[in-house]
Length: 220
Image (cartoon, rainbow, N blue to C red; front, side):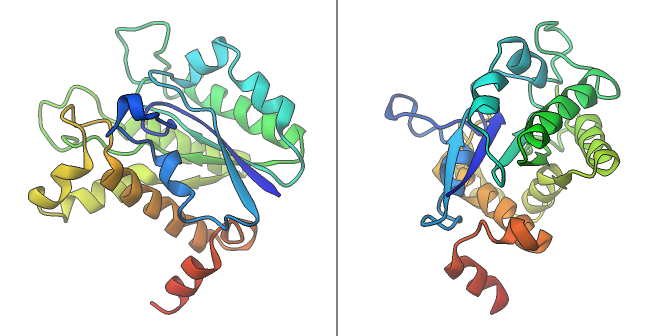
């Protein structure tokens, strides 16, 4: 059975009932994958950046379990942006891309397939006074993916586009009150964007998806 290992932050994390309704995208992607052929091992954790995830040794247990043909999904950015916190901040043009390369090498050393995923948009991404913006880190992930030959799913662009074209009364229930963390409806919606990107990538990426989802896309 193929395993998707997921490294990321709170927007990805597998939440328990203690934090409901907060829900990570990784929890909902399992609705889109072939449950008889694919399992998801979610190692995402609240508040982590590429730097803190690596510094805390959280990549090591993933490396130990990775096998040929598995996937490593890497989705960071929210906390890499926090310049006021040196334990988490990464410069997008240097340390951030260097860290992404470490994740890619980890996967490839075990015969697995790395996938970069740019961070999901915050609810208020378009506000002129927004404190954090994904643009430089998303661009860095895209550039790193191209340079390293790693597929990059641009969730930032897809989620920003979706939010821009969705009425507020429809999109408000997707987010927790902080406008960053997700409720089940939001996690399902954004997981669907990732599933659509996997479908468009084709080949081994498309093969991760549930047959009924593939059929729905081919009939669209």
